[in-house]
Length: 156
Image (cartoon, rainbow, N blue to C red; front, side):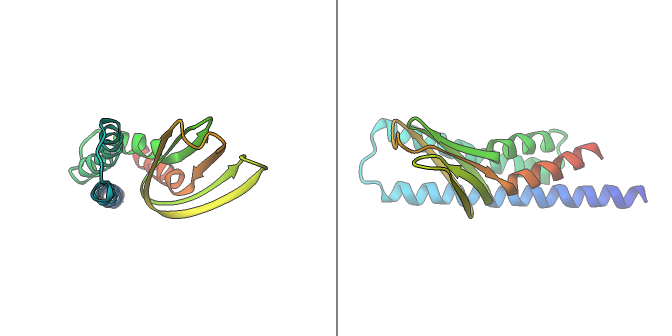
């Protein structure tokens, strides 16, 4: 019975690992495509793209740790999922990061209180001093599910 639990835990860790690698890989590809679409490369643009790139590479790193069954794999994966749990935009500052699938529910407080529902794959939204009228908060249900799953795996 104990061997079945160990095999199941290892299989779950592999699944989470591949999910993070694929999600991070899609994010890296999206960044590269948007770089090819950009005509000018001011220093600030390069810095923002590098910032986004680091997040997606971290997801790939977490997935690789899971595939290698490293002791810190689940801890890093938890950190990665917590970074993806919520997104916000207030007073011209926005941040939202997802490496993989997302199903999010949120509130748009810009003009009135509207409930938003979104879904998609790998995204990064980072703005400073833009869209100052935008006020919203989003909660990623897929990341929440993964946090719960990883938490259970850590207990085993």
